[in-house]
Image (cartoon, rainbow over all chains, first blue to last red; front, side):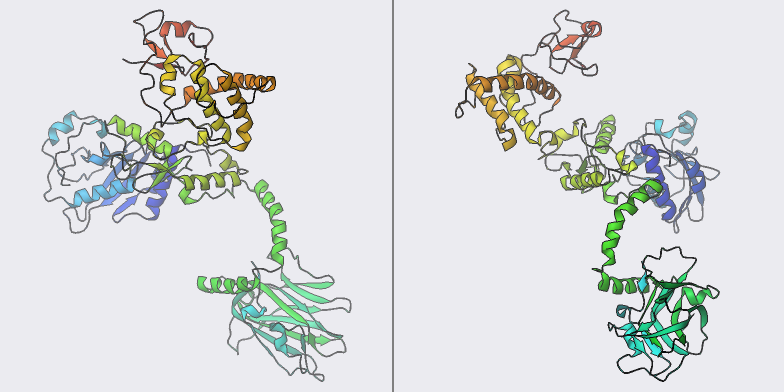
Length: 154
Length: 484
């Protein structure tokens, strides 16, 4: 086995455990992630009994070489981006653990669970109030955005 | 591990198609008796001896000792079946006909490449046919048929059926049978042979399949964040143990957000009552593991604590004796350091230095050094804290101490300059150290390990990395820029 960088080593471990014991409604594209450990696609189903039941989403995770000390870049991709007050129409997610509140003790699995629970707790399907302005002006990388977390309830 | 399914501990059942001589019952073959089996005197072959095993057995080899006293059977047929159903037919595994010289027969499988270490001398060797693999791989019943004798009564001295629990059996069966066997055989003699062989075997393994048999690192030696073997495990207030380096990196990142160091698992900032501590026992276990497996290539590459830079995190650790001061030699160094500094280094350092608690505990092996040291100290005109009890004076002691002093002073200076103190006052450089460079006042200033300050111009032009004030040499990465 070729020498692995620390981030690859950790990603490999996470990929293995995510493929072995995925959380409900979450499924990782193992082949794609296995080829390029720094970019994963994760398929996600809306939880039962929520506004997103029956919908399918794709999440893209990009990891820097500083992972897990640096947070992953997480966006929704593909045709179906959930309509949610914290998800912009370009796929960017306003979630504090993805930037400020990231901790190396968090993992891909815990991020997925957070996003599932964020979707599940939604009461009304709508875009964020500043959606059109943000989408026009934002950087491609959501981590470059200076988020202003205005809603602590979700 | 091969088991002998005829051993009484595995409770085989045995029966015979005919009556036996008194005292030589067929049951002797499966209990501790060494009498063996003799058929009744007038009985002629064939005679079937049927064994029923505790479970399905993957037969590996069958060894038959055919003699009881001078009675000896000479022709055998080995049969087996995979069901206990009495009506089911046996399938033949092998035949053997012994000559007068041959003392027994061993039936073994050709496809299992096990070395026949325990073949007694002069035994006939016969393959077991695998035409009916059910009968061989999950036999429940084994029939040894005596088909021929040499003008004697049909006899069997002993029989051993070696094999494994068949793969079709459940795990509970396998575990149960194995435990039955090991209970009986834990102190058995072959283990001694195995022990004797094991080092050589291990070496073979090492050289042959280094890549495959990598030493398994126990899970709790791995950092839960980086999944690497921990160098300096540290227990967090949350109870998790992570590597010191991981914690340092986490704190650097936290600092980027302007936050104080915190537990990465809970996010609770460290305070006076909740601080990370060094997980000493785990550290000891990791070290032991690393030393024991130091022959393994993968283990060799793992980082160790020796030579590790003392980090900022350690400043916050409570109740920690630095390993640097752990052995007796460094104790001496410490004793010495406080005195040397008092004597030789002028005002600026002495001020703070003499507030440090002086360690005067010395182990036996270091006593000679300290004694000579003390001797010398008592001769020096300056005031000394330990000039009371010992009064050995003489040229000899002086010479030794002079030599030692020369060496130690250098060492002490370099050690002291790099060492962070945990019990000393923080305001070490507050007083006395010149704030500016001697040549210019406005330039960019750098601080040397000896706490003297030089300007950038001098630093870049100087040929020999040595402090101009005290003459202490430093390496190129030592100077630290001073920001006002």
